[in-house]
Image (tube, rainbow, N blue to C red; front, side, top):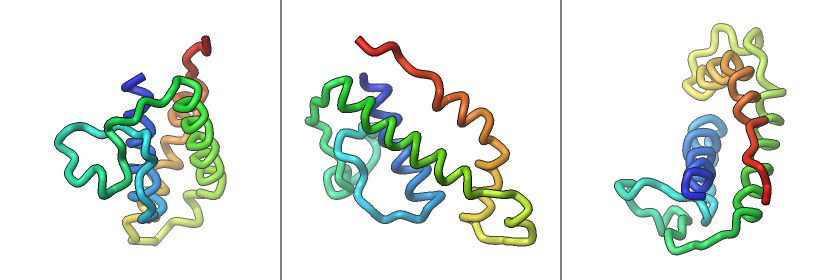
Length: 110
């Protein structure tokens, strides 16, 4: 459960903030490492106790969000662009097969 909650945080931190530039608070049920500063101010609730179904529902939404974003990324459209965000998009587009494989890996539901 902690690993899945950490993946919720990772998606918010690395994908939403770094790739899309979002400044929205993190998803409350996400679980960051203890050394991440100002967790409460960033929207995280370390005391949250979500059910497995709740965490899987959030991961499904995040997976769909990533799939939608990846479907809009084309390396040819990014050529010659020096933007950090667009450079990240190119890297993610190149990594898309691995990302899609990771998104299809599901834990059995009880």
